[in-house]
Length: 265
Image (cartoon, rainbow, N blue to C red; front, side):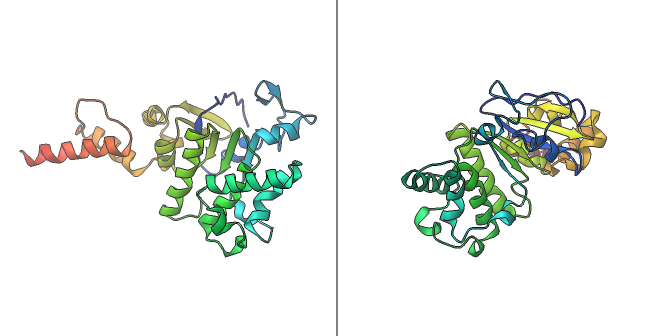
């Protein structure tokens, strides 16, 4: 890591993007004390992270690793999700409530899933159980390392919709690593672009994408197809004079306007 200086505000949904090996996972593993900075400090809610308070911090900052389903080890979904609250000292009735609440939050009805073996579930369901493991401990901040990797389109959307709902309805601050920039565009209100251990760009995703031409090397390979299309249209001077909304609906409107204009000629 090189000169990282960043602030994550409560309620944010931040996506950290960048090529493999640029430092994304290393960065988030500092957030709850798994890694310690060689220089500088990590602060959570005004408190510096150190060896004395690291377990207190980890109750606030829940981290879900890439392919978290590989770490499932209990014989039922209930026991799997109960494990964290049990280690935290909650009694049996409290644990039952937390398990039910966490499973409901990720769209896994308690009666249907609680007593199934985790390995009997689909990959997407296992991923949601792994997220429920962390949610059962009521974190204030949810950190996710590529939560949609390996899932099909439907599975990715289901996971991301659930995470967004947690962010909007429960006020959980989300920091998510992704190599899919379209996920940042659709779900995040803040995007952080990394390259070679440094933060190149941080801000609103739409504004970051408009910096494309100044960051050609770092961002080009990760651009969503729809953004590449907008740049191509811009190069050929096909875009309307009005500003473009950089989401699917906004770009769809632009394309429909161009098609109607061509038909009228």
